[in-house]
Length: 534
Ligand SMILES: Cc1cc2nc3c(=O)[nH]c(=O)nc-3n(C[C@H](O)[C@H](O)[C@H](O)COP(=O)(O)OP(=O)(O)OC[C@H]3O[C@@H](n4cnc5c(N)ncnc54)[C@H](O)[C@@H]3O)c2cc1C
Ligand code: SF4
Image 1 (cartoon, rainbow, N blue to C red):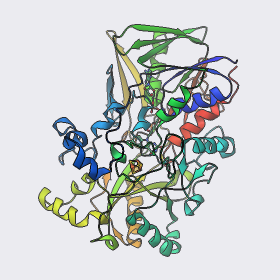
Image 2: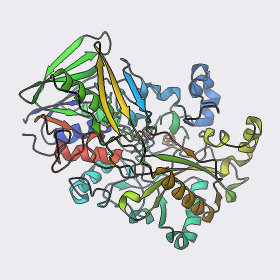
Image 3: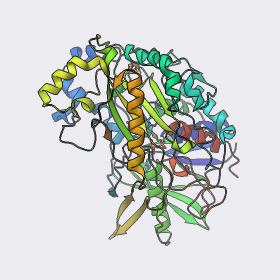
Image 4: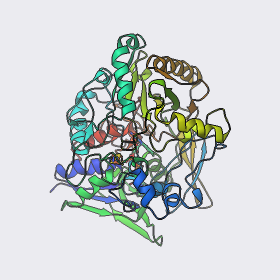
């Protein structure tokens, strides 16, 4: 038996680290706040049946007092999280955060933020990994292994020009009628679209088309937003449930880690508080792996440094993907019947290659189903009643592209901790680079042109720039580098300050390509779990 590893967090990063560490013969002890998800209601019912059969559908869909409803005067965001996902964002011991230019989200759930994710799983290519201390060849087998475990689906199509087609990719879920029509139109127009360096194909999704073990293939119940009741969409709690069967895995939920103690430049103990009651819990630790999510791992690290009597540093380089939501109307779908039996999130992905890998722009296309009405109704230039009438006429013809931009580390974007009178305050600051408005305008113009070629209209003025922090793709506070200062990690995620401390979540990413990062977090955590922890 090899050495014990203490892991903090059961999110996508933590469970994939633990899975590979156990496979390598290690004993893993995982501490977690670990709020559990509610049992799915009426798991066989589709969206319409759910509305008909629930005693109080308003309560289920919109929450008590319609708490999940975001009204038009709210300028920041289009979506509220439905009540069935509230557990993902619950904080049993709320902390004080002062944030400027950044809207942070934390999760203390069993499985973390990805219990609410939309499953987009896109590998970074060599160009996008250029600032990483490893290349695609070093992480490919982990992409394939994670893909196989999670059940990532996709297709070997034009998107493979901008993202590698690694192993373990399964058959995708059937396309809905609107997505199918868009893809057919793309096939006809792709030569012209190539002039804009534009490609489109099937989304790579952590969603099963076929049954696998206890998880069912997608039954097209149209309930993704409220939580897939059949396990078709992968969430990390599925892996956690498997880990719990392993004799060398010990899981301890109900503990919020506050800091670690340091002796001779090594972590000696971890100190947590029970979430029920607040009693202190202290555990000796030979090797500590932080997977509490980029922001929370930074908080634990900063607090530990402070309690060790050192000055609290600024961890610079915080990144997130800027996102623009661009609604569109597909004229060829006007007047078509709305199909209730379909997968709800994005089924198509778009790539715009504007030169360098970090100029690549990633688009996710969602055709409108039962939900996601707000982004369109809210931005129509009519009264609410007229907008709703218009929406009903147009429903099946509506879609939304979520356009993702890359980010790079900049000194101004930082996270630190302030402590005064025994109280801690996490301080986050983010400012976009000065060229962002031009970049967004230029890319939006190209996307509108591309959509026109696909037979769609994306009216100018209806696009929505999401606030920084909203994409929840947080990274870069302790970047992995071959050589670097104290607030960096080595190429295997090990701290340069404390010899027996590793970070396996987004903290260690030295750059943030436009593609959603979580698949890379899982593959990187697996990669780190296989190094020799001596
Ligand atoms: C609505 C939504 C949609 C998304 N869609 C996508 C997508 O399509 N594709 C994509 O790539 N990404 C997506 N994401 C982002 C993705 O969910 C995150 O990148 C990912 O979940 C991060 O995983 P993590 O394990 O690093 O951290 P987290 O998910 O934040 O997990 C942190 C874990 O640590 C535990 N923890 C935290 N603090 C402590 C503490 N002090 N003590 C003990 N335990 C602690 C928590 O309980 C949790 O288990 C989405 C996110 C949201 C919210
Ligand atoms: S993935 Fe979505 S559409 Fe498919 S079964 Fe789950 S909730 Fe239904």
